[in-house]
Structure formats: C-alpha cells, structure tokens
Image 1: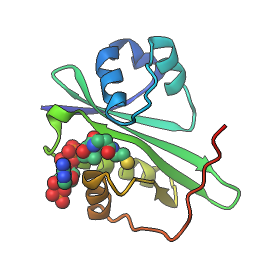
Image 2: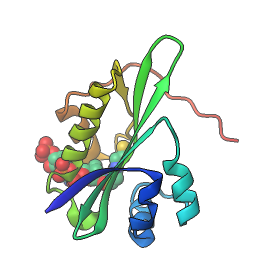
Image 3: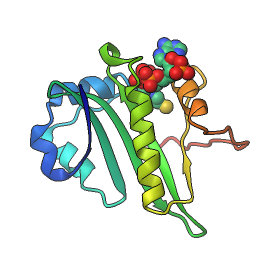
Length: 144
Ligand SMILES: CC(C)(COP(=O)(O)OP(=O)(O)OC[C@H]1O[C@@H](n2cnc3c(N)ncnc32)[C@H](O)[C@@H]1OP(=O)(O)O)[C@@H](O)C(=O)NCCC(=O)NCCS
C-alpha cells in the first residue's frame, strides 16, 4: 500500500537519503545530492508544502508545492514531481498531483502553475488529464 504525507523538517530523520537522492537523479540530469542538513533546510521553507509517497517505508515519490505571493495574486507553483521507476504507472503521480491540488484549494490559492518539457511524455499527459492547460507565454532563464 502506498502512503502519502506532507513532510516537515522534523520528519527528516525518517527519510532514507539513498531513496531521496535516487529520486532526485530521476528528475534532472544535473542533480544535487542532499544530506540531512541540506534536506532539512529545504523542508524548512514557509512557502513549501512537500509531499512524499512511501511504499514499505521507502520513499518512492515526491512533489513540491510552493506558494508564491505575487503583488497581484497568491499563486501556487508545482515543482519536482517524480515517481521512482519501479513504481510508475500505478497512479502514484496522479494521486500526488490530486493531493497538491486539494492542498492548493484549501489555502485559497487562485491558480497552480507548472512547467514540463514536451519530451516528458508521461508528465505532460498527467497534467493535461488533470485539467492543466497550456499557456501562451515564453519561459526565460538567465544562467548565472
Ligand atoms: C511523470 C511521473 C511523475 C508520472 O508518475 P506515475 O506514478 O507513473 O503516474 P501515473 O501512474 O499516475 O500515470 C500518469 C499518466 O502518465 C502515463 N504514463 C506513465 N508512464 C508513461 C510513459 N512512459 N509514456 C506515456 N505515458 C505514460 C500514464 O499512462 C498516465 O496517463 P493515463 O492515465 O492518461 O494513461 C513519472 O513518470 C516520473 O517520475 N517521470 C520522470 C520525472 C518527470 O518527468 N517528472 C515530471 C517533471 S515536470
């Protein structure tokens, strides 16, 4: 059975770092490796709701919701959605997104934004199926 929980800094000792770093490596080609201190610091952000999925005590999924207080609106930003390869296609990604959407509604956020590269076929399917729509905007980055 899969269990879902929002993590707080106090939960950091219950997280297996190998599971955590393996998940992060499945999310990006240039991952950073967390230790307990850096992960606690990550969790200790007032704007963050960090969802985790567990199977048999192992961390198998992650999804972050950041609440961004813009000048005109309070918005939600979804980042870091990932399910371990061995656990995909069992509905874990869908369930995590549904829980983040529910949390977003509870805290009175007007809309939820996310980005996903078109090559991420599973992720794009998932977001469209949940009702996200493509916006016409350019995404810019300044590398520093
Ligand atoms: C995206 C991801 C989180 C989905 O997790 P999951 O637990 O497998 O998701 P679900 O089981 O809820 O399935 C979600 C949808 O993706 C589809 N899907 C899953 N794997 C797929 C694949 N390899 N190719 C095409 N569609 C796929 C499922 O069929 C389902 O869509 P459907 O119900 O319309 O058929 C997971 O594939 C993943 O971690 N990918 C790597 C990291 C990533 O791309 N993260 C997103 C960053 S924006």
